Image 1 (tube, rainbow over the protein chains, first blue to last red):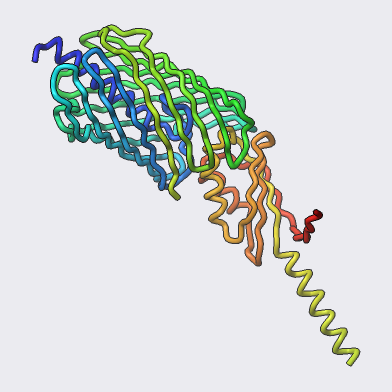
Image 2 (image 1 turned 45 degrees about the vertical axis):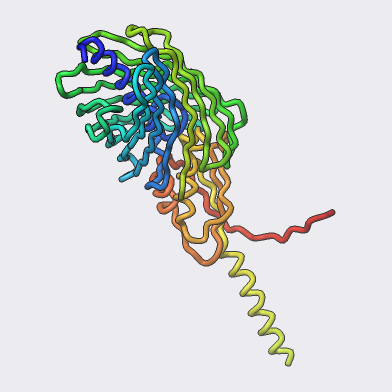
Length: 257
Length: 107
């Protein structure tokens, strides 16, 4: 494979993998950006969704499963295992398990007041090259991310910025996300909520100096205290590699016990 | 015979009053309650306390109310610790006696 093609394929995989990691680590709203709220559950929950990444090279479908576990109130660990199917325009379809990621989140700052909270945490994600080489990058990556959020009953603001070190002399990545959330229904418990989100999700790949920035509107329906369904579209507003069309995700979060 | 009746009446009254005294109503001011989906952890932690019933969470007021039924003893420290374990900040905690009242449905 030519180096330029390798770089483009790597950037596409990186967009799939790293944006996926961000989304899956989000324990509560928003949809595509991580949240600093750890929920206070020992375990028993999972999150999964289907995501289609459409590019000029073809479509990729990703179905991840994330399982978090709180070791303490301020420390959470977990694992993410995606299943990936590629539908290339030239070539046969390929599918298999993607790379396994393990993560830890440590709360750094928590300032609570009546019906408001400001929180910040440090997240570390280690990805291993356990996936099938046809659908995942054969590299280790270590990501450090600072996640911050201000959540009130009227709106929520979440940001995250992370740096990924990638092995095999492949370029490192800078990931950055911003999310604004607006609830359409009164906040009550048990919840029945309809939330709108507008997010910016970006990634810069060093060495090749390619950036992708998505504008991501989304909608989320929370039907009970343990279940929600959500959907989001991502349109590239900056696309240095020039092949990204859109991504679409539809998913659920479910707390089993 | 009259004496036995008085003694029986006394026992009944004592029994009724002590059962009323065992039920408690707890009001907890909780800071950081800003996301209803995030409050499930709080409900779960409070449900760990024996005898807890009727947990109600008011987000606007930042107020959690619950009842504790039976003879279980409850301390402010235990409640405080459960709220903290759920990732929120407990403020004022009020524990008072709670008397169940019978309700009638009028059609």
